[in-house]
Structure formats: structure tokens, C-alpha cells
Image (cartoon, rainbow, N blue to C red):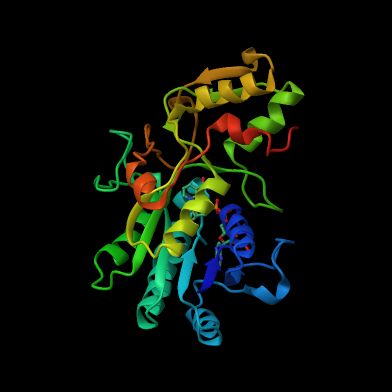
Length: 296
Ligand SMILES: NC(=O)c1ccc[n+]([C@@H]2O[C@H](COP(=O)([O-])OP(=O)(O)OC[C@H]3O[C@@H](n4cnc5c(N)ncnc54)[C@H](OP(=O)(O)O)[C@@H]3O)[C@@H](O)[C@H]2O)c1
């Protein structure tokens, strides 16, 4: 087995590098910028813009990969809304290009997607539920998913996930739980939504789910998230309770009071039955993971 990991500087990418190293699986890690992951040896790293098909071809011809774990993406939801062309180029077209190369070389292809392919009317989504994305980010991921779903080639998997949290080296983007772990111990008040529900996903659990997909050569759609769907406000209360800080620091607010550029689904969360039975996916509770995070 030899794996190409795209987005290796990202939070999930870093966890995948660690997991494949631990399991002594050969890999090449690729991201846009310089290698920012000290756990990724330079000889295993390539700086590659996934929108540059020549650079992608070069990497694929230099190594005999068996699997691609495609995590690279434009992940800032509001930035995607404001720059739709860039978002579609990275999330849709570059994914199609990578998938086409996987088909040509007969590689197993895993694509990381999102709960934002759903409109949030129903919640507790199963793999067979019909997407209806609200935002440019969600649409870009759904368009990429359809390239796989509509192909005659079936050696692929789609791993959808929900707000991913954890610690990484020089990560571009914060996440709600790491942010709460920073702010609450300092006594800083936070305002959190009572009308948006999510199942926060520990990055280590997500990496393990992705690893099981490739290790077991599974195909099809998989929903990989944390075990509990909570409002963002409830997530804050759970972190405050763990830290034993004053819960009055957490102010309940409604999404209508925020001026976010991109519309977001109100209620997501996943039915994890398929991931449990097919991959042995048993994600940790929020409390079980908080000791692994830095405190402010
Ligand atoms: N984080 C979440 O809450 C969440 C929720 C649902 C789904 N997902 C999906 O899960 C996957 C992993 O998320 P994450 O949080 O680990 O992402 P992340 O931390 O934002 O990292 C994304 C990575 O993509 C790379 N990248 C961006 N544009 C690129 C390009 N043109 N060419 C090559 N690489 C490029 C970046 O590389 P550089 O750092 O080198 O610039 C970065 O390392 C993504 O596909 C995301 O859509 C994430």
C-alpha cells in the first residue's frame, strides 16, 4: 500500500500522517505551502497545488500509489461564499481532476466531504439522505461528490464529517472546541448559537475512520462524526463544565443575530450505524478528548 495524502498541513492531514507513520504505511504527504508538520519527514513531503494538473501528474507519475486520501480543500465557509470561483476550482474541479487520475491509474480514492451538503431541515443524516446544500462551500463539495457518484468506476469512498477539532502544528483555521478551551479558562465571555446543532468530531477519530476505509478497501459513502449532536451553546456548556468555569460566561444567541456571509444548515449530526458496523468506528465523547487539548 502507498498512499498520497493531500492537505497534509491541515488538521486532519496531520493526524493521517501520524497514523500512517504509526502503522508503517508508506505515504507521500502533499499540501499547498511548505511542510508545516514537524512529524512529517521532508523526504515524504511534496508542495503541490491541487488546481495545477501538471503538478498533480508529476507527483502521481513519480510514485506508485495505491490509494489517495484527498483532504485538501478551501475550508473557510464564508471565504468560499465570497470567492466562489476559487472555491469551485479547489473543491470541485481539482477533486474531479484528482479523481480522474485515480481512475486512470486504478487507485482507491477517498474524498473528504461535509455535513454542509445537507440543508439542515432533518438532522441525524444517514448516507442515503439526499443532499441539498445551502452555501457555496456545501455546493462545491456536493458537486465533487457527484463526480464520484456518477462515475462507472466504483473504487472510491466519500467520508463526510462535521466540525473537526483537535490540536495541530500551525493550523490555518481555529475550531470551536479549541477556541473554547482557550477563551473560557481566561474568563472571557463567549456567545454561542442555540439554534445550530452539530456533532463535533475529534480529528484523531476522523483519521482512524479514514484509515479503516483504506485499510479495509471500503467503498461508498461513510458518515464519520462525533457520537453526540448538540447545539453550539450546549457544546460550550459541556466544555465549561469540564473546565469547571462559570457557565455564565456562555451567552446564548440566535444565528439571525450573526452577520455570516454563508447560510448554514441549522441541524446536522449523523447516523453512525454504517460506520460502526463497516469500519468499527467508535468515536470518543467530547469529555474523553478534552485533556488532549491546550488550555488558554
Ligand atoms: N474542519 C472541519 O470542521 C470540517 C468539517 C467538514 C468537512 N471537512 C473537510 O475535511 C477535510 C479536512 O479538513 P481540515 O479541517 O483538516 O482542513 P484544513 O485544516 O483547513 O486544511 C486544508 C488543507 O488543504 C490545503 N489546501 C488548500 N488549498 C490547496 C490547494 N490549492 N492545493 C493543495 N492543498 C491545498 C491546505 O494546505 P496549506 O496549509 O499548505 O495551505 C491545508 O493544509 C476538508 O476536505 C474539509 O472540507 C472539515
